[in-house]
Amino acid sequence: IWEQFLQFIKANTTEVSYNTWFTSLSIYRIDEDVNIIYLATKNDIAVNLIKKRYMHLIEQGFENVTGQSYRVLVKLEEEYQEESRPALAARKRIQKFEDTNKLFNPRLNFDNFVVGNNNKYAHAAALAVAESPAEAYNPLFIYGGSGLGKTHLMQAIGIHIIKNDPESRVVYVSSETFTNELIKAISENKMRAFKNKYRKADVLLIDDIQFLENKDKTQEEFFHTFNALYEDEKQIVISSDRPPNQLVNLEERLRTRFAWNLIADITPADFETRVAILKKKAENAQLEWDDDLYEVCCLIAEKFTDNIRELEGAFNNITGYSNLLDEHIDVAFAKRTLRNIIKDSDGGIAPERIRSIVAKYYKIKVSDMDSTKRNKEIAYPRQVAMYLCRENTELSLPEIGELFGGKHHSTVIHSVNKITSQYDNDEETRKDIDALKKKIKEHR
Ligand code: ADP
Ligand code: MG
Image 1 (tube, protein in one colour):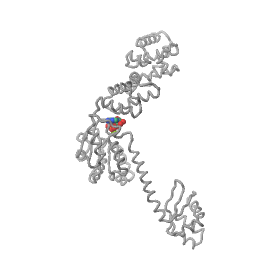
Image 2 (image 1 turned 45 degrees about the vertical axis):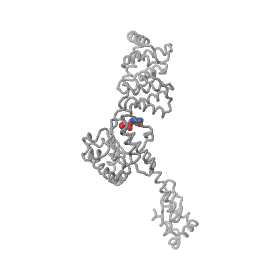
Image 3 (image 1 turned 30 degrees about the vertical axis):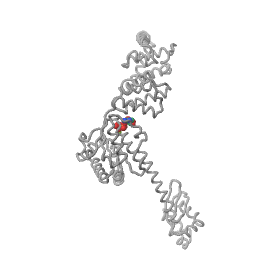
Image 4 (image 1 turned 90 degrees about the vertical axis):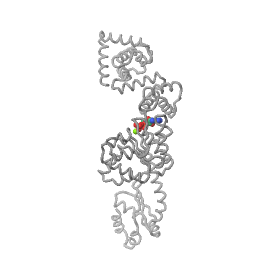
């Protein structure tokens, strides 16, 4: 646009003016966001004169050439340089901070990581690396089953290092993302940017390396990345679901490198650690740690033994439900909620779903079925729902009773028997039950 712009000026001013004021002028920057064009010149007389006499013409010129209206600012070149240095640096810092921040989940820090016998070795190694990157252990290789805290530790390392040294270039990446970025870089011809990003990191945290198995091209690239970083004495942390020697579909030269320094494993947490993790979560959620909550956490910790993610999931479900229904969390409440999750994941029908289908069918509230109301509008759907729970789930009679607001199992027997006989003798009931059974089937 600059050439066209000059043509316009040339045509609308005298040759002397043009030669004197405009030939030394140049575009410094165009800020498209706010429609400002910054012009620069070396000549300070020109700055003043242009400001006084030519601003209108210049703005017209740009509008003519671009079809858009811009505000135009003219300054001396030096002025720009003075103001831009710190401003530019600040902008870059903020940009980098935002980019880095996206890679880290602030929750996954060391404070929130509960140390138990199962992970104390990995935790100590991670903390050592976080305190003195590239000095303590390099590379650090952490392995363990799914949901045991590998990603949490990697993230904690990154967060810790950035906190200590905001200028440090810490890159966290899953092997999957690494692979996808590589493929993209190759297809878009942007290998240089890709290499720069990874080979110029101060700390590279690469998660779930087992994903690179059987991906020859990615392994090759990662091999070079690893070497470049290692030679520059940069910290590398790798996680995997298996120890290096069991990554059989990974190149030998990578496997041996992974084992160059420290290998730390994480095993499933013991009962006490599992309860401690839940206690930490309860604290973070600002829940009151009373006996009921303690018992509930013990219950969850008994049921979910080998995956902290599932352990947390169960806890979140229970606290979430309790929030939603505004109910106090105790063991009975937790059992009801858990039963729903567990049945759901088995592929069977969750009793809670049966209850909601029935409630909807009869246009009552689910909670009405938990009440002791005996009017027909409530009692009948309640009996139907109990009957359907008996038919469609593995729940025992007392369990069904509990599910319906803690009814005695004799109430459940009575309901089941009553509906069973009505199904045979009463056309209305048969129609209802058949319709409901069909709906339940659709939900499986
Ligand atoms: P992995 O990467 O090994 O599959 P994650 O690090 O994603 O597992 O952990 C799964 C969930 O369990 C995360 O929400 C994490 O915060 C939590 N978690 C795992 N171990 C611990 C621990 N020792 N203390 C607190 N939370 C943990
Ligand atoms: Mg993970």
